[in-house]
Image 1 (cartoon, rainbow, N blue to C red):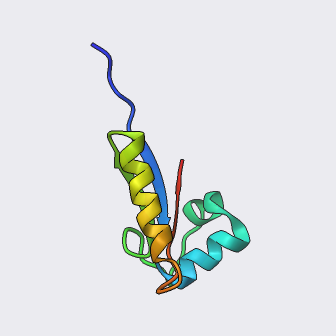
Image 2: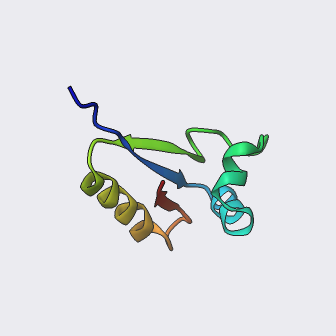
Length: 75
């Protein structure tokens, strides 16, 4: 039986987290401890069963950019 691999999407909802990603990148955001940001609220990783679901989520987050400052990217 083949186990399907989940598609991971990194997201940053708060302006502070999104700006951190712009300056330092996703790897730095997830490898450093950030006292001012809350993991799973300001930023995190979501898993999806299909690439289409992941792409739809990323599209929705990126479409919202401009009202707040969220960003998302498929891993």
